[in-house]
Length: 285
Image (cartoon, rainbow, N blue to C red; front, side, top):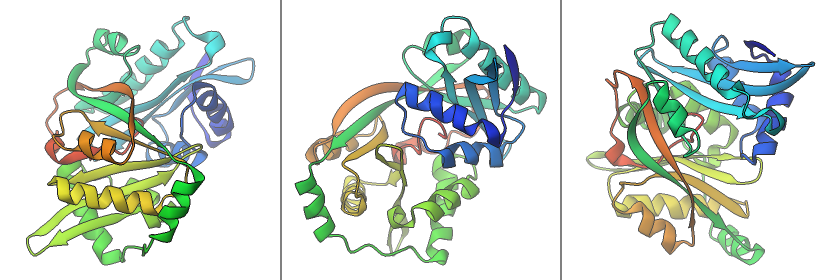
């Protein structure tokens, strides 16, 4: 089995593995990795087919993210995922990345711990399933407008503080693809919260969703749901947030699964997780 850098030609193979795993990413998400870190994404290939993937993204040299770790079900248990992860780590160590982060499933967490990763905090996936009647009612209340460019720049500046690094290019890409989901709340004192969203392969994804208080968070959640036309909505929330669980339950979301945010190295730029209702996604952080 050959381990090599991923190219655009490998995206269909990655999508096949993603579909087998039941994940929500699209081809555009793979492209975001390849455009941001073309030398840091890898595939395992056998007999001309992609059997495994792992991708990285560099955030301002402060830390890197590892995501899209996927293995063909027929080849699991052979160390393919471990070798791909080790290849990512070797690459990031070679460019002297001080910290590597990822969001681990319960199954993957023991492996990451063996490779030197530590727990930062817990995350939970929540899912909302809506009927056609629900969507008709939401569409009737939708008064959305695209965010002006100047206001978007204020949102991106606020995100650097909340996330811990500049990911403006990534968020601009997401905004460009689904500008209707980009939202922000201000008052005389400045930014109170903001949110982005994506259209996934089977669900609309809310995140990052950042808010200083429950009122702001609820306003943005309601706005997102009114603009989403998908029967399924997912979001990955910080478990320690004091109000997000109650808000999600109010709107009919149900708990789906746990994740653990982990890091390897010096976590010198943790951002402000106390402001995070939900992350951008396990693949991007």
